[in-house]
Image 1: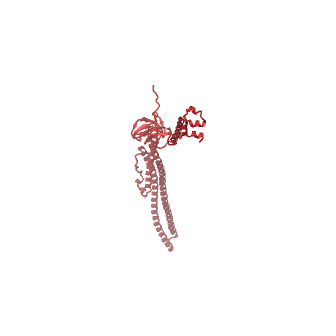
Image 2 (image 1 turned 90 degrees about the vertical axis):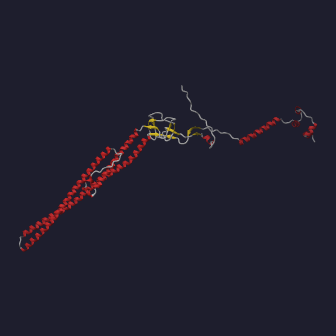
Image 3 (image 1 turned 180 degrees about the horizontal axis):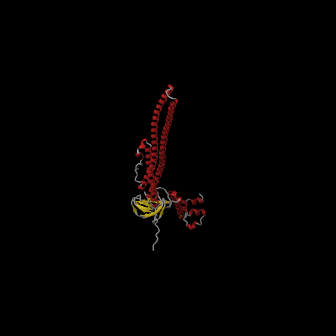
Length: 392
């Protein structure tokens, strides 16, 4: 065993060597000084503490969590059936019946706009509709008269030529009724006079036809007699009992009557043709009257259809001038502050919060914080009050 091994063996070293003080150990050889000098417990403890701290740090980094705060600005508002009050028409405020925080019932008047302009449009549309309705009824009555005049027995029926009674609706005022009735009487009277004139001429031609027929029958009888007379004189002339001049006179008379008969037949044909012409002229007059009134009636009906829609629209606009509450609740966010203020279409003038409405928070996150927010995540709400200014 070498000396170095001897000193390395602790048992032999403890038995043979004496315990040296730490200051004495500094004079030992380097190898013995290292062996005899024990390590400092402070350093060992510090080393263990650092290792423990590193281990705890690794464990915390694996199991621990870091809170990320996402801040969002927002507002508290009612939930559910909050009603926004907006006018459908632009107008000037005539009366304001509510204020912020006031409780209103369903159907209660909130705001009234000046209805002068829309009322004028409604009255104009209603008046025009009544006028065209009255004209349409008048032309229908005139067409009914014309249809009766086209019947065969209308020439001898005064009732078929009279102006009919019009069943006026309630929306036609009395002045319009009287005006249209006067126009109807004038139109029907003019048509009646024209038709009566044609009927009188046709009746005259019929009488002339009857007279010519009777005359032709008489002429035919006379011609038969004259033919017998001529035959008798020719027989006497053949026997030498009468002169030839008498036969010539009888033939002349017969020829004159035959010529007269031909003229009468021509006049009969002309009278019958004239009746047809007059009948066609009569029908043409009635057809022209019917065509004119039918065209005017169609135009009036088109105007009635258009004006009915305009009247409904104007009436709806008049109703839009009064804003009422659709539900029972509290007025909030009133933007109308004074009378004569002008509000425009779709402008929000107020909100009605229902009586049973809850509250909700509407927040606006920045883009950098949206990824850290999840559903059902707890949140802390901080409410900022309005700044208070001291009034002196």
